Length: 355
Ligand code: MAN
Image 1: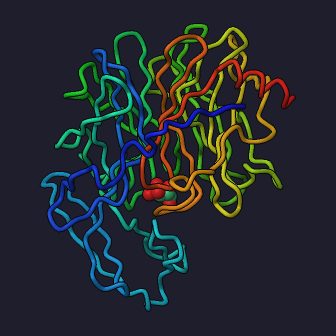
Image 2: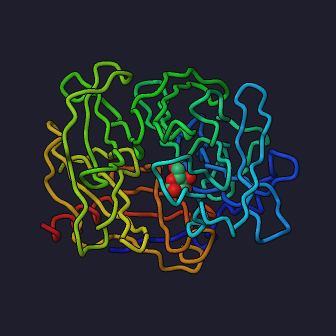
């Protein structure tokens, strides 16, 4: 299958984004939800900022007060045995049963806008900035689904209470209405289907299991997008395969005559993130008709292989020109945003060959 990566890639890098916080640096502009609005492509970027540090033996952790937007910085020494610093994204308690883990950066959502879909101008102000106590460690990985004339934006809200999934709605990308938490901790990678199916809304979600089970994709239904039930297991990780460690839905499902095409990310035990596809029944999306055997996209380019967290392609959204052409915007190496053109027909062929 041919993935036509933009020759301009990466199209947005941390250097393009002015820090919102004084004394901070932008270390990532990535994992963007995508919307088409008023003739423009909007990227709802996850922007990650961290306090500038000169001393490499110190890790600074930012925690925000959602009311005042004041940030408290906790300092950790990498010599401290109580904590583990192996994953650059988190400071983890060695004994997870006691005390807290933290994030090394604070993420929020900022909008980049473009007429042509390649050159973007970036808003100075955040669109979604932590606004309640479930978001004191940040807001991450938004996905946008347009249903009728409303845009539904879900994202992970991270705090000491856990990683939950929140929903807001907007019609103008200036203001939004908070719809609260739709999936309790720990959950991630929620995408809403773009229309009701047999009178109900559907969403894919990814519970993060701690005692028994794996990081698999589930499906749920709702009468109103706020209350979700009738949860069913949809697709699991596959030991020994590229998606053996964790999987999560990426883009809003694309309706085709063959079924719903869901592009998802999968990671190996080494945390190498690739993209694969699922084909779900049009009338009953709890039925999986086909699934990628091999990924249709892997980290290949330098900007996909090297960055803050290496070897990651992570799609959260796309624009669709016609029945066949999808322009996917995807996070690369937890650092920047890249774009590529994909043929939906080729994805379907790839899925059929996987059966
Ligand atoms: C993982 C990664 C991070 C993210 C945290 C919290 O460690 O996805 O990027 O900040 O989870 O969601």
